[in-house]
Amino acid sequence: MKKYTENEILEQLKLYKHNIEGQVKFHEVDSFPVVHNIQYFYYCEWARTKYLENCGVEFNKTTFTKHTPLMTVHHEMDYFNPLMLSDIYYTYTRCAKIGNSSIELDNIIVDNDKKAIIYLTSTLVNVNIKTNKPETLPKDLQTKIMNFEGKNLILGIR
Image 1 (cartoon, helix red, strand yellow):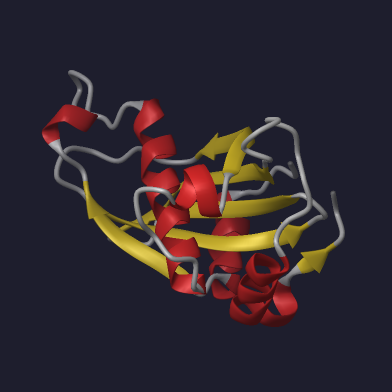
Image 2 (cartoon, one colour):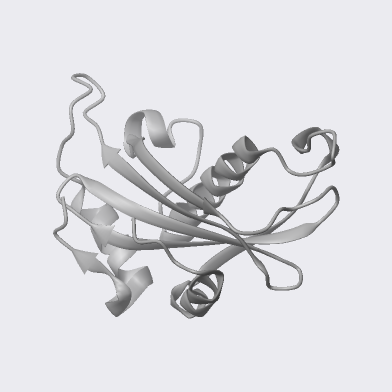
């Protein structure tokens, strides 16, 4: 993952067409009361789920076990500023790359003052639910993401 400065991350926000709002809850902070680092992965996982739903993937209890079995295989995260108890934040999501069996989804979290909090890149692989091996992404999923993202997408990476 390329290392970006906070300003470079904020400049990239113009590429993101999807975001959701959240608020830091008591159980998500440590004794300082700063958001515990694992919580950012949860925030981004939920944002990725809502992103896929926004792209047209049906969301229900079997979405990721039968219909769209995407398994997260890699994360890289850079931290810029902390979130604190009760802060409002926005999690931006975009698909940066589509490969043969994988997609790369990027997240940026910013606070209410538009300060960059984190930048996360995640690789998700389409998995055959019987063999647990990667398999080609369904064409309809590729099409839904390509239609949503438009020209900002890189194809054929993996």
